[in-house]
Amino acid sequence: MVGGGVIQQILRRKLHSPSLATPVRSWLSSKKAHVEAGSSGVRAFALLGAGVTGLLSFSTVASADEAEHGLACPDYPWPHDGILSSYDHASIRRGHQVYQQVCASCHSMSLISYRDLVGVAYTEEEAKAMAAEIEVVDGPNDEGEMFTRPGKLSDRLPQPYANESAARFANGGAYPPDLSLITKARHNGQNYVFALLTGYRDPPAGISIREGLHYNPYFPGGAIAMPKMLNDEAVEYEDGVPATEAQMGKDVVSFLSWAAEPEMEERKLVNGFQMDIPTISRSAPSSVLQATEMVGSQVPQAGSRRGELKSTA
Image (cartoon, rainbow, N blue to C red; front, top):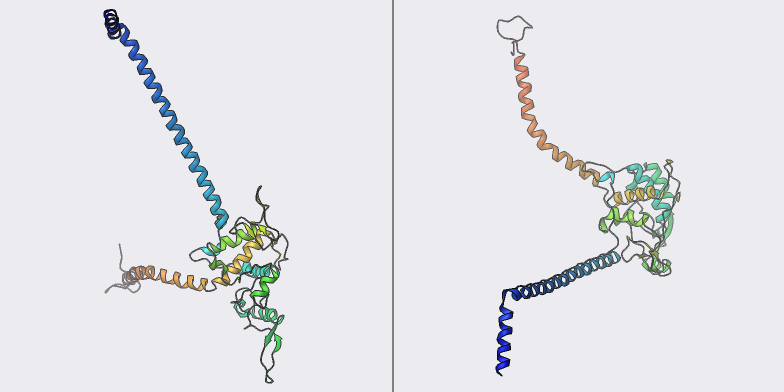
């Protein structure tokens, strides 16, 4: 027991001696630093993992949003969107031709009559001639029977189907919407319609499209029943403008924009006149005053010879 106590005292003195304490403290410090460095590394990897997870989650959400609502449309510089800009009436005429030859077989424009086109895209004689090409069921006559007659200016543009059921049956269950107000009925309407018409492409790898549908990233869900309709030279423009896909898309959107908002030019004209009234009101008094001073400075003074004017210097 005595020997053991002596040995313990010797060991305690050695441990507390300066020569041994410094190495021990250094070793303990290095172990602590190593542990802290390891903890920092773990925290860094945790933060990095959280960041990557968030980025992947954001990408997944963005992809899901695009798949659900459609790809965001680019903003195109429509010439009639300016504060005082007007429609391109030549483009409206070409756009009506595209609608008539490409779109009218499936889509109606039930709010537009032939007389609406007069002075906008056609002369009255041209509109009458177009209307006369269709047959309209009218009546009853004096005998109580319905009859057909040539169309006239007051008639609406013809509808491709008798009713919605017939339209769905002819289009595999899909119902082609009426286009009278389409650029107002869709969010970002003009850009959406143009992007949709010109945005058909092959589906990306891993995406399968059901038979009878077509891939278009701008359409909600990415699969649309309407096939690509605008192909180069699908129509032959009367004015000789090359009928490219983009040109036809621009023209038919111009026509549809006018159809949805035919009063736009008149409204802009009225608003522009109202904006100019304060300017005229502010400038009128000073202009009248300047004119009065000018006339007054040119009145001959008493005693002066006829024709001599008072100096304004």
